[in-house]
Length: 572
Image 1 (cartoon, rainbow, N blue to C red):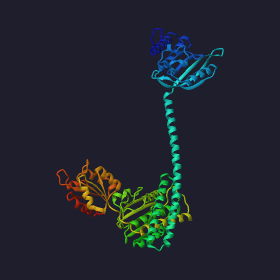
Image 2: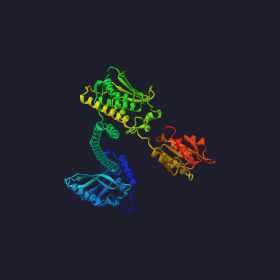
Image 3: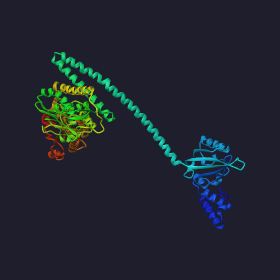
Image 4: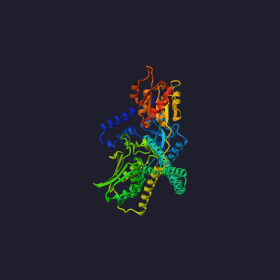
């Protein structure tokens, strides 16, 4: 406190120093040589400095301090003058390490050395909060060369320190994430190794032994069983290979081996291997290929594209149908078309056909089949790696038309000649796809799956009567309410969902709308029961809401048989 018992007004004090300097400079000539004027200049600079400035004696006691330091610490000049610097309000609550660091620094400066360090002191919010000070202690020597005083100059760096601390935290988090990614990468490498060897090698053994048994087995029953085993093993191996290719593509590890070769001959070689299989099914395999198309491409990857598309076409073409494979070149690009006379792909499914894990009605809109649904996704990956495009449309033959456009000379590619190993790998891959399709097509017809029906009807006794009418012709699930019926429909993908007159909190019309709007339930038939009460929805409103079939709710026991016959009369 001041001698008058109150704190000094540092703002008024600094203004007084400024006014005194102005008056002195107006009174005297040669102000630069006037010692009083120069002293007043120093006072103004001292008073107006925004840094922390304190004058200490050789033992670290405070002799003077500038207003900025007092304001930052929320202390009065009288509260710090004569005290050791480490006992003042700026260092209030500081830990022993910080105080020891300051005392040792002062001792070093008293010996004539400069010391600079960062320290946390009370310089924020008028001394209420901790801030960081970049503190420089330097000695002032007298004429005798001895250290007479010490100047403490500090620059607040709280904001910079916070940024540094935040960066340090972020760097630590980044380092932890990097280590985690490295562990994930190592795990992935081990997993790929296990998939490549520990899973594929046993499957190759199963396939080979199955072929040996098929060549020697005389019993038709044994041959049928072994054929199924071989098909299942080949399915599993195909899915593993597809997933490995997809994982490599995701990590940018798929590299093309581009060589100069005859694209027409490469396509013909693949197609000719499928000719006997098409002939066995009385399918006309039409090849429209030029004599030669000089291009630069990956022989193995292109063979896989052609073999997958041809296998897909033959699989879906009906017995006695037609498959066409054509190639044309011009304007620096080649166009490959593979078409079939099968059921084709509905337009609403074409945008999804090249997605991953799309198979059958869930992906390409045609009859469902085995597989992980990665074949066409990988075909697209290989085409795009060549800098090409693949499209799906309607074939003149009535089925699907896949059009692949490839540049004859991909950009940034170097000239090379196909090696014997590459040609062998391409032939081996084509033979694998062909033999897989052959086993799939020659296997015993799959027994029809047992139909499934989800029923939601809370009218007492009606659901039981419907179940009695259906009998053992289907697997039936009775839902408690509309929400459970919707969940069961998504999980089970049943052949039909029967929506009764009492469905819980959700009205029957709302349930029908949600069933119809769910893309996952495209093939599920929606059957509604029309009640006789006034509050029951009319048949017209049920059809508007999405019902594909409306039956009267009366005569429940008879309803079961009629319901099941009507629900399964049309193909999904």
